[in-house]
Amino acid sequence: MNKSRRKFTITLVLALFLLKAGLVVAADVRPNVVFIMTDDQGPWALGAAAGDPNAVTPNLDRLRSEGVMLTRCYTPTPVCSPARASVLTSRYGSELGITDFLPRDAPPAAGLTPDVPTWPKLLSDAGYVTALVGKYHCGERPEAHPTRIGYDEFTGFIHGGMTSQNPQIEIDGRKQRVEGWTPDLLTDFAIDFVRRQQTAPFALSLHFWAPHANQGVNEEGDRTWLPLSDADRQPFQNAALMLPEPDFPGLDVARTTRMLREYLASIHAVDRNVGRLLDVLDELNLTNDTFVIFTSDHGYHLGHHGIWHKGNGRWLLLDDRGPRANMWEHSLRVPALVRWPRTIQPNTSMNQTVSHLDWFPTILRAAGVSLPDGIVIRGRDIGPQLRGQKLSSSDDFFAQYRMRPDHAEGADMRSYQTSDWKIVRYLKSQRSDEFYDRRRDPDEQTNLAQSVDPVVQQAIGELQDKLKHAMTAIGDTAE
Image 1 (cartoon, rainbow, N blue to C red):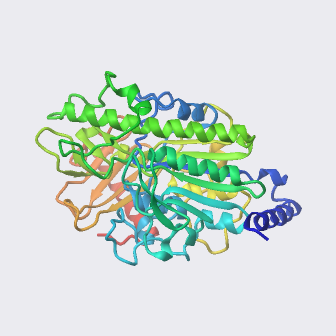
Image 2: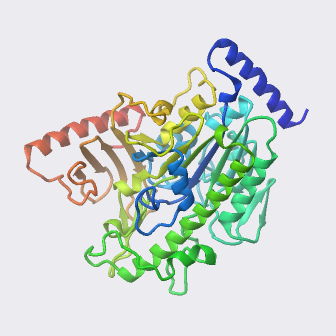
Image 3: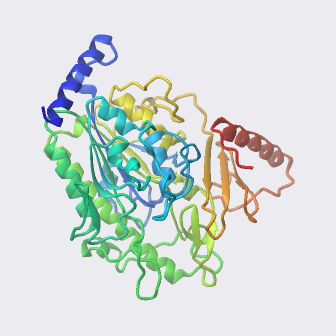
């Protein structure tokens, strides 16, 4: 019996069991799952969906109009590897031993292990055919391979694509150079996977390398997103871009403008390919039965606060290109769009705070798969919220980032936020702590940590206590 037929048999038996148990209404509530994740996309970097005056994203705007936009979705860590591990496991990076991005020379034991539950593994066990196409970055040793932690198929990059053109891709267990634009190639493989599914439901993770900058540099020795296709560069070639903070003291306006043009063109490449995949779902009559999630591993700055990059940010100033570690809003908040026409109302918004920790239980519940006894997860099922119900849960959110010791700043950061306030603690750094009034200062421009206002001082004390409690709850022992 081949894998697809075996999966179909498992699916049928499970669906009949769930139906008899009264847990689902009918077998067709088991949707396909398409989880699309970009790399380094700021929450602001969407056209009509987020109102950015520069971005051109008609297909993501379409996804937003046909589903729900999560306006307050956050990552638990503002860099690649721990954020991606949290998406897969609903655990914090410190619980997994992944607290910063994993370099190519990472310790042999670094990364996920087969004994850690993941939502792809539980879906696979329940009869889904699972595949990861694109970037993984959760460990390079054999035990951490995507096919060992839940994916039946893997085509992509164990570490990262590193380039926007002619990437080296692992296909059927063998790395090979493939000619073409990287986002187009990954989408080709994703579409091929979807077309091959005839019986069992499928769960596809499509993880783009874009809009991450390329590994190399341009002729001036600066980081670049080029080369990019003419189709993606053209909308921004001569456009008069609006910089987010053009008057930031000492901002290198020319450099910021050049980088923003390339960055937006890279996002356009993602958008164009998301449209290709959505069109195939339409063509195969799968749209109504497919739960589509679009997000990014973490947020991004490009001129915001005078920096570019994410939690391990870098200054964009005329006299300073050095590091600026941070846990600002644009590093922690991510774009998030969800579509499932069978259950989610189109063109809606969800404004409650959610995070990458919530995808695991939400996807499993949508698929009719129960969590195993004894499993530890940190997220919650947000399906009712996606369908328009308001839950009583708070908007509090805890995040962490422990930088590798060889980083220029080597900061060990924690943040805790409520609807009203946000505290950022630099536990092992010369940098001072930060405190923001989120209602009056949503862009986090004014640090109130040294304020003598008794209201602010009381709020600081309350958030320090909440932060300590959140750290204790997950065994985060940083001092």
